[in-house]
Length: 68
Image (cartoon, helix red, strand yellow):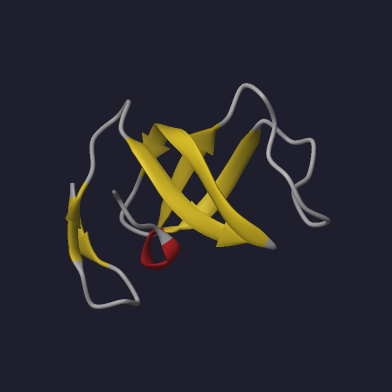
């Protein structure tokens, strides 16, 4: 799926891709589900920070995602 994030980058992501996003700090996860507005990412080790710290699944708006 292709979309343009808030950094005005055109990104193409597929299930299984690793993507970055910022929630308290820069974090990374594997795409396990996606739609036009949200990407569901998983980090089996758990995310960090006050907001999603300890969670292994996060729902991230597509405009907040980047791909290295």
